[in-house]
Image (cartoon, rainbow, N blue to C red):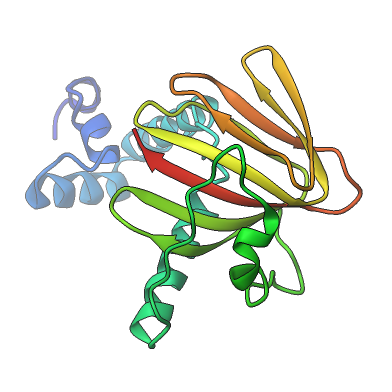
Length: 201
């Protein structure tokens, strides 16, 4: 190739690093990078710039996604293995811990408790019910299509809805309004154990 500078300026190397070239174009770039040090150096610089951009603009994943995904997989396996489907009662202002005792008696957290652990105890198209253990906090979130309700079973926590702090301990129930940013901070020395329901709005 007569003009390496023109080849570099053509944009083909950026497309190569992005994986947006044909196999033939990729083979040519790789061949040239072996024989032309300028091309190899440019590929290295482009790769470094892409990596730096990705790291600078990376989004922290929602830490609640994995625990609830794992809980859904676990629930599906339990049902498949013969656990009978059950229907925990809907949480309301009169709800009591005793209403959920049959599920609490058989639902345990692992010995090494992660920051957030969930075990689904009931699921319908309209509602999911889980027992959740929270060690320190649950990050801010907003629900637009489901109402979230908490019944504290053990420990204590603050649930912050917008700028309003709700101090909750065992036996307290709270419903989160739609479209309101909310988060949870554990205030007890032990993990906060809750009955959590998400109900389609």
